[in-house]
Picture 1: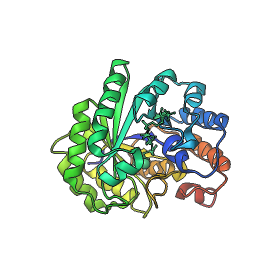
Picture 2: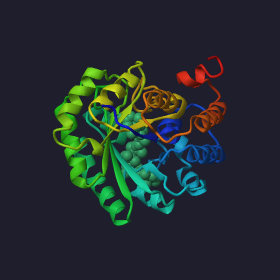
Picture 3: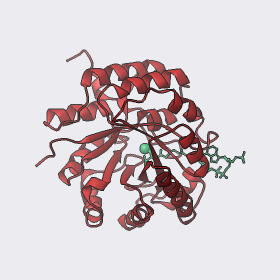
Picture 4: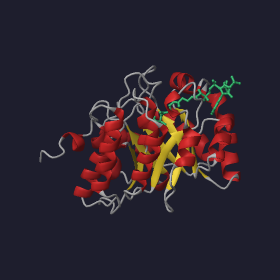
Length: 298
Ligand code: HMG
Ligand code: MG
């Protein structure tokens, strides 16, 4: 009853690099994304058109997006928080804008400097203008399974945000476990509620592996019919406005489990590992994925 194939969306160049201490040269980011483009991935979140004062690591978003070699068939996407961000994203000819907000008030305020209510009109404009420009739009809701400031988050709060984002016209909603607190039972329970309102094809899961539960949460999501997963190569990443958030679920580990289960991803493992070793060297620290740590040992 598992799906035959799933889509893995690589968010390392954005979610990964936004939180690394090392400053990665623009040319190295471009080289890395070009390597990722040859792995079979069909969707790469390459950067973020947020206020560069908030996320200095991705201040070179326009240069990165303009500098990469676009492979036909791949969607190159980026975070876009407002119209100023969209202006830069369109200048860089991004394929898709990803808008984002949180289910919890305090995280939303800390992350994008607005209340949840004040965020809607800003995102509404971004979604509309992106669609007018002939591009697709993805939505993210953060803190779905818990907030670093408020603790538990109700599923009703998630539904409220999800409803509003879909009404605006997003094509897919990614459910973020921003600080990696979810467990499989909670994933099942939240998905039960959401799947009564939205089809599984419109939902993606975005797990961080802070407490080692990300892979188990993937399994619970697969069981509920979800077939799109965000992941970050080597387990790079976190969220700078969510204390304690660590890396995303590692793409290479996810690939190992899925392919082992006979679930196809279309990704070439050797090329993916080569790309992981490249960025590991640039960030200058051993990345946390199991597959990198056991490389060559078994
Ligand atoms: P703000 O400072 O409140 O914005 O930021 P503002 O509208 O008051 O503007 C202030 C100044 O910033 C102005 O310049 C704007 O032009 C400029 P000034 O007039 O003072 O010279 N500005 C910009 N410049 C370039 N690009 C822009 C932009 N916007 C304003 N886009 C804002 C509001 C939302 C922009 C800010 O809070 C921000 O950038 N936040 C982003 C934080 C962030 O990137 N967090 C991490 C990503 S979310 C995440 O990781 C979670 C996720 O992975 C899912 C999960 O795990 O749950 C997606
Ligand atoms: Mg994230």
